[in-house]
Image 1: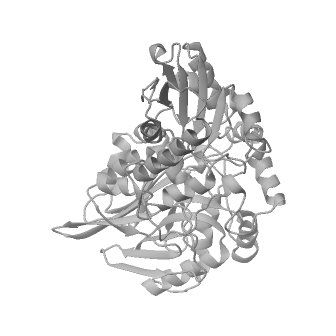
Image 2 (image 1 turned 60 degrees about the horizontal axis):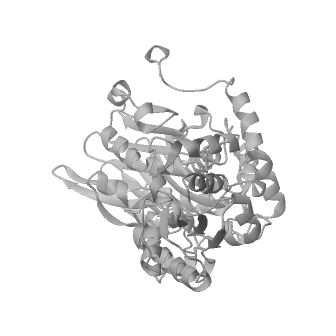
Length: 508
């Protein structure tokens, strides 16, 4: 999962890109990068770490230019090596840089095509570098020294015909501008906005609307599934549908967990959808757990707070903040390795004992993925003196790997895979476990925009919307991306050559 930004402005964009990435930090805490164009030259800074740690004053001074793109990430298809931090760039044609949120499901086929037909080498295991080279190869086919908007759209159309998966991307081309495009299924989010200045109109693209607001841009609309939007260096905007077979099916996990509550995705307020999830789940708890004497409703901060508050209202029970969150610990479910995740939970959350002592507690979380966090929290609630600990998940059972840009690649690491609710309940140690139904989850999100008739829900139901996923593919990504494989690859990558354009004297 990643966050992307891109700006075409009439003044330097380095600070605005930095601010946009900071607002999108929740989408990726592993690495960050910014690339700008000044005098037909790329300036790039990227490294592992948080935005505030990657960019120092000396880096910002060097990132000159009125056009640029930025990226924050969690590693999905590739490794977490700094060599795979984005944006990536290629020098032909023109010089192209790209930032990508998502995952290509036919990456291996594309890599072979690039080598056999385009004679292009891909230097990392990142599918984002593959996407960049596919785009570069298609732009090369025009044979023109100066590309027009129709050439851009033709290239993107060809990309969409070749590429399968979830991808929201922003590419920057020297001498031309920025082109942003979204996969034909609209799986990953992408929005754009504008800002009027004395020198002309400025445009910004981002993964979430909240980034636009932070930089003072007016939200215009979501980029449509299969659409490409091209903004020239001098601020002219062109848009065109670049896919034939489009379907609007946004990833429902954006609303469950990933997106900020103050964002609007595909005309759906993330906050409002979470309130709706709380209403639906509260009604289910009232129906099915009428015999349970719940004393208090406590959220597991922070994405479940809105859900828990609504559950408390429906049940007419007190709502309390029973855990204090250390905001300097990253999202635990996506951390590499079970042991690291277990240790991080204890550092991330601390219980307020008086809210648990002698009470029947209903804990509410947004989802249960590996179960590591849930089991630790149930144990913490008991240590704090809870009499009975009940557990509610705002999302259904996560039973299947995600292949579209969320790091849930291994079915064996998902606690609900091949298990029933009673087994999961026993595994996490709670006195009762209840999940939101998938029907209620879809209804809760769709309530904010009834025109969206389909969602990407494969982690819950195993229905992969691109239609190209089979067991062979799932076995392959499991072998490549499970915790053990990642650990082995990290050790190998740590000793490998890293390519960058920073002077050694400047340090990190």
